[in-house]
Length: 110
Length: 122
Image 1 (cartoon, chains in turn blue, green):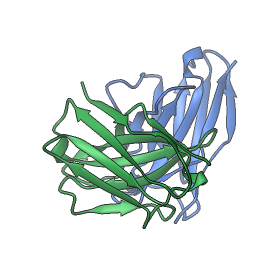
Image 2: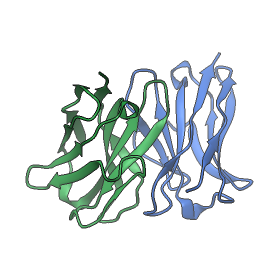
Image 3: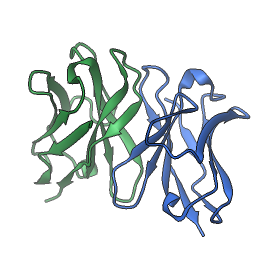
């Protein structure tokens, strides 16, 4: 089973832009992995922001976007807000194969 | 509004059993694969199990296979996790989650419950 790797922590200034990435030990992350991005604020349940690389749910703030960059899945936050401070998890469900979560990135907005 | 409400968590001794439930509302429950995901204190998310909409397809993480059993009752719109031979390392917040795709086992989750806490300790 592949290991999914994310940056342990990142920081961004309010109003700034930051990109979180998600890599797989099995090789490049592609659209076939259908990457998801999940946000978890302190003390709250997870909330899925992005699915299938770049698709947003109705509740996903427009400042979040997903993409593939250099063989990795990427989550870009443009115009960071204090309320975006959270843990962000990458999920590679790989279309029905066993889902694998990344270790998470703790994003600090300061 | 899609809602998932877990229950059944608690404090249990190692080696004992516990049954978690997840009550679903706001969507056609029997059209969706459902998942259990857990989070140990201070740790990340860990997939535990998935069950297809007809219960034909059920899968488990290696860490729980043979000890945990996932089932569902579509008439009651409920998902269950029977946990046997519990270990201290099973201590976690257990979430149920709905699959993102209707009538397809994508193994991606879109809506999550609030979770129920399981503590395994003597």
